[in-house]
Image 1 (cartoon, rainbow, N blue to C red):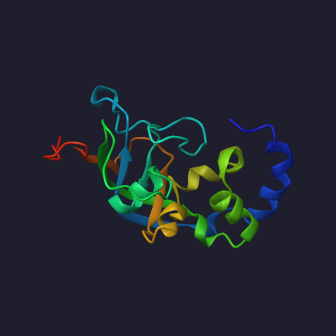
Image 2: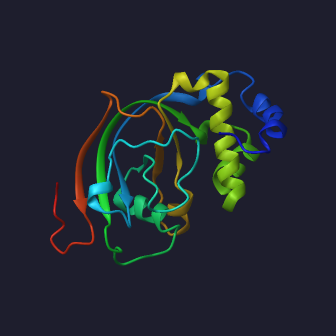
Image 3: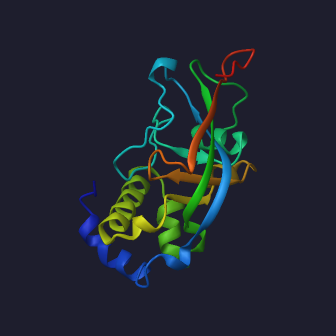
Length: 190
């Protein structure tokens, strides 16, 4: 669902994606992870993907945002703050993914990248939500099944890595491998 500012942003998106998205889309394959905190085990759904184009606004949001390492995932969840442990009901979910990625790093427009990656708070949420809505509206979203970028939060604490937002839901190219409890001394695997 677009924000109230979508119509004023639309000409900017038209400019950024004037030639479509093909030059920004490429194949990728990764074993990625996400960390979920504050969620009881019975409420975990490894394939939940929000129907709305949005960034996770809290660590308990179960939207499928993956990182290429546990350290990068931890930086994203804790917003760049160094943390030595995990709160209760913390989980590491591991996935295997192969598909087509829209790589934000390949987009040349620095204003777009800044607003998508560097802006903060509600503005960042709205901008990325509007960008995702625009891509859906134009039919470009059919050309990729994830959106990826270099982790801003990870870079802030020296844990750079790549972040993936899976946008197509469950498919043969996206498989949940395992779930590990992080707040348990034994790290129980399920």
